[in-house]
Image (cartoon, rainbow, N blue to C red; front, side, top):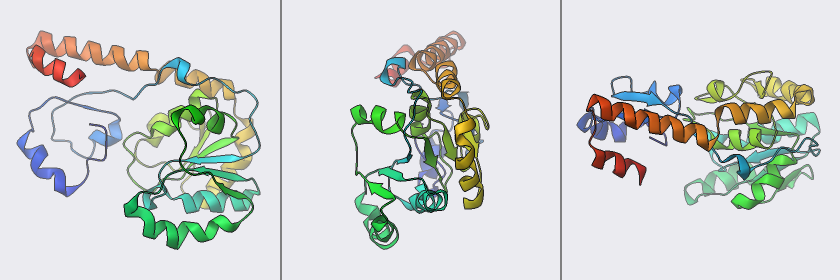
Length: 241
């Protein structure tokens, strides 16, 4: 289960397959459907070699993700404006969000402090995130995981976020970032972000969010379900591929 699951349109599917063993990617995600057959919660992971620690950040804030209402890029822009720190936005605009982008975000991009770089590739994320002073993640929706947070931590870049959805599970407040609910709090958090250890952010990633950890937990789960007779081997093969 890799996406948002709290939508009523999906309810008939959940009702039809209520006994299917499911794995959530955060506790926050599974809390939306307490009646399902959740057999485990396993966080996403990334290969350790995909990103490297940058101990010497640049002098800008980063926003990476979709330019959509639930991601609240306008909040990130306001935080940058209040702190006086430049903001670089690497994001795409889905067709469904074009009206929102044109009405809300585009007028805010005229400031010299805000640089909209557009969508970037996987290979460009190291430089974009690694050189940032912090990642801004001011979401306003029940985020089921938030892969960009662990991408930033893998680079040693702390995260300043709103504590919605899975964010309190992924971040350790005061260690790998700060969590604040409103713009005033987020602005204050940015002013304190230099007090955080970038090595500690990387260590947090290595201890909790690597691909090896994720794969081991899935492998252990499959073995456990096989021993309990809960799944057939063919079912596991389908789950893997």
